[in-house]
Image 1 (tube, rainbow, N blue to C red):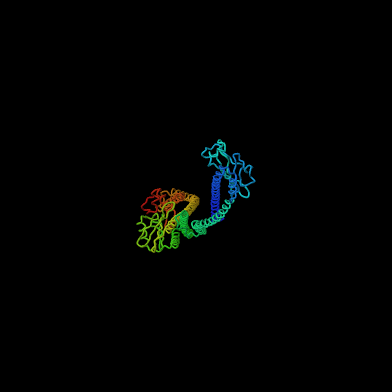
Image 2 (cartoon, rainbow, N blue to C red):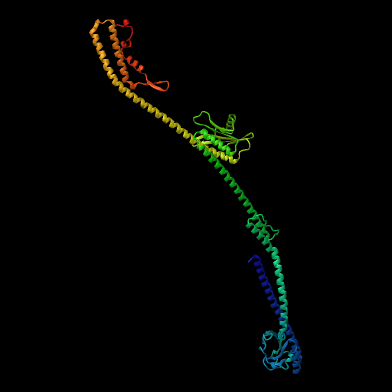
Length: 547
């Protein structure tokens, strides 16, 4: 059920209850009022009849009393007039069938506790439910006045009662007529109230709620531009303003969410570009192992990806006196200018993302670090436009990545240098072992050869000694000189043999070309130095040397 039907149903129910209740109250009030008026009229009629009958009763004229009663009983709406004695028996009546009989529905009550001044005014009115219409019975007591006490006992307060039965059919007809008018009026009022209330509700509630409902459905469909304002100052207007404020807040939140989404997309795109650039730099640098090639490729890839005019990587290599510079788009003067600008920015081959403005150029430098410490700096110089923030972040990340790459390259170079040194050491060890083996073989051959030569030299020395003893003083100077030459030669042979036996203890003498050799001549001279002067002077002029 829609809100309109609920409002209409509730409104109709309330109006029906209100109009119906008002109608019932009004009908009851009108009936009571008509009944009161009829009762008053009947009581007045009874008082008039009683006053009329009082003269006839004082004159003791029963015929006049009967005539008056019948005349009144024939009036329209009067169903009966009864004169009762003090016992309640009907004495005079307009209906002959009731004469001498007790009054139907019982005689009226005659109280005995009323003061004398109220006896004349005492009466009773009640409604008798008869068919086809109810009857209003009005009872008027007939007091025992002083004028009547000549014929009646003075102790008797009431002589009887005058009862008038009046039909309520005219009143009911009037009430039915009024009921018809009232029903018509109530129906018309109900329709008018319903129409008026519906028009008012439609104007003040239903139409604004319908507008708010349409706006709410539009918002539900995603159209947040539909306004929800109403030019009203009541509760519905406040509700509309509250909903419109909520709509504006939703628009603001959606705008913020949209901006956040755009910023997130931009950040994702920037990060994707950064990762793509870093991956590209990693791919081109991982293929090389020497620092110059690595930094040259990395600089080319970075500058191409960022669209930067020029740049350089300055590396402080441990094995270089001057920094290694890899640059693009710069002359040597530009490189020196870059270094001076970096130093002017507070960077001594290191900067923590410092950025400076130099004329129309935008200069930035970032440290290239490894775990061991600072390796160098990455510098860029953009001639056209200032460097964007995302490019600065990418350059910083690239510098950090190059630090790890440079560290690996330096480690590789150190390993290559260590392997080369190891190979050279191994070659030297092999050469030393070969030389030692050759010396050992030479020593063994020398020992064998020196043994045979020593035996031959000993034989020659023995023969010379025998010859010298045989000749004694008979030999001339030439023979003695020959014998001395033989002894000197034998001594020299002995010195050579001693030098050969100590061959492994001789030092190697370096010669041009990187070769090492044994200076045998020096070893022989050192051995001869231990011999006597005769051996050193062998070969001199024999005329100057005695035998």
